[in-house]
Length: 417
Image: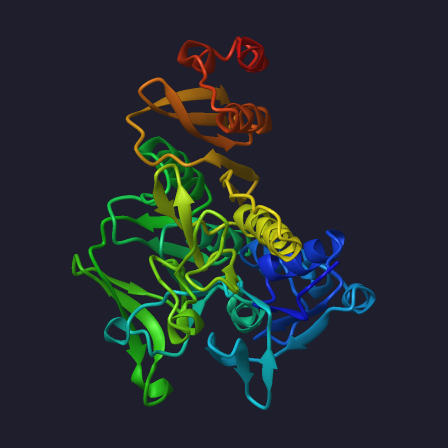
């Protein structure tokens, strides 16, 4: 089937692994190479800050596919290998000791954990990011009952790390510069729910800290080791170590070297193709058209769906057939203590929230813009999540009177169309 001699995928995460699998499923029989900077087989990242850090999952549990899968599918794996440059003119990529030619190149480079600048103590020992296996392997030995940990960042990663540390018996303080946790991704009602959840588990949450400057113990070495922090309010905190969970920076260095268009990540068109017709992009590193604007989604769901879309379009282009636009269907999740937090849709532009409180920690928050249903936050409420997701993806709304009335089964919303 294939006219291309070689498809090369840079980035061996969820998007990269999904893409090579889907290419083979679609009948692509040309050469296929998957390159990853880490020395591990492609693995899933979400459990790193949850089950893996907690000790409930090992490396085998993280791994998406065994080595035998890639052997059987004739996928050449180059792990622990960095790509140093891309030359679009010659359609080649440079590794440390070789140059590889490609007919189609896919960038699935993901992102890197953002961390505090050096001026705020970013160069101190004892400050740990959460992004890859090596990060967790370095962090895990520090998580001992009775120790004091400072977590900087009030998004999903920071809150998940706080939950793990609390469950393992640490004295946890979480600090966020903004006025509330989850400010970028959720309404105040959802922030309130998770603030209360963490506080009932003994986590101290400091919001509106303005700034956080880590303090180092100079006796631990020239650079020092984290021993506390000074907040913009003037308060000083003690800590044995710190975890940085302040977000993700899309990995765009290779795209920039190649001269590709960038816009909050690697800019792609409706078909997930970059500004070079032979280079595609998928996953956390990518910004793409969405409802008249552009977005970049940091989620497993998007990485999988977009990778599959890229695989389809590569195959369609090889056959000389029309490509298909990628239409994102955003969904996310987070596990904190015994709460499964599921999100469907994007709440950008919402003007009001309808609360459905079933009781005993089961609740959902429904975001509307006028009468349009935009998103649903579901806490231990799988039915609310599934109903909301189906309605949003079908372009339908939900009667607020039904949503807020817990005596009415949400299934009636599906029947009403």
